[in-house]
Length: 81
Image (cartoon, rainbow, N blue to C red; front, side, top):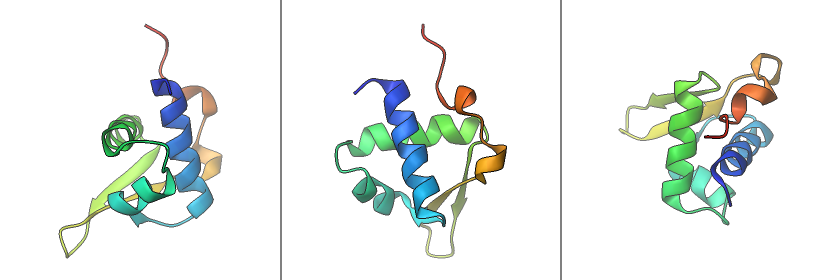
């Protein structure tokens, strides 16, 4: 799977979930992806403001998609190199 498709897949999984989840839970929601692929997609989406990453009291990273009305499909996918 190419990186733009991975980004869309991870963001879609978060939108479908509708709430926050741990990074480990997100990996189980995308079984066709490796942990590294999910991590890189989270990094990209977070840096572009499309998801929110927090650290909870148990020192677990939680991720959540921003509401669909603030998400632009064109900004979810990086431009080709």
